[in-house]
Length: 182
Image 1 (cartoon, one colour):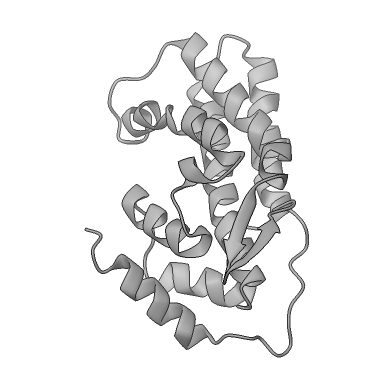
Image 2: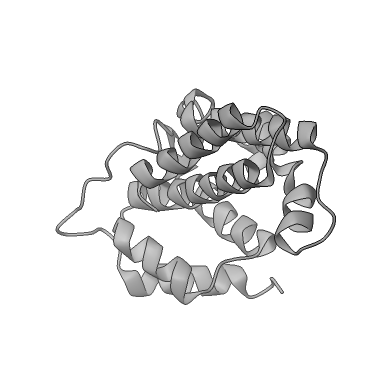
């Protein structure tokens, strides 16, 4: 998902919240989709810093069918070398947003809904963090023994005409990282 698509979803969530100030499942779902988009953008951005093409990362995520939380975390740990809660600056916000996952699961799978005020708090929290990524920009990551500050995940990823690493290598890395995940 492109940065403008992610931001548009978060902004649409905020717009619906302004129309329905008691909260709505629609605003929450749009905010959650923007969160999922941002999470995948983080992977694309980080693997690009490691020398892979962004399009190869997107393709490998699709080919490996990375959709579950466990699969995502396995790939995240390949990218960042640790769990999101252990990456500087990410932990508190990540924990806060992911605390809404049970609500997301109930709504998406047609179970019981949520209180309007909980939906409003969740959609506002998520969309605010997706739109204001300062909490990500200071995150320190280590790639191949070198320390980097993550920077904005919305920055344009410059295509490298001569990538340092191949799609086949990335796909093999993803598959080996997912071997132990159900």
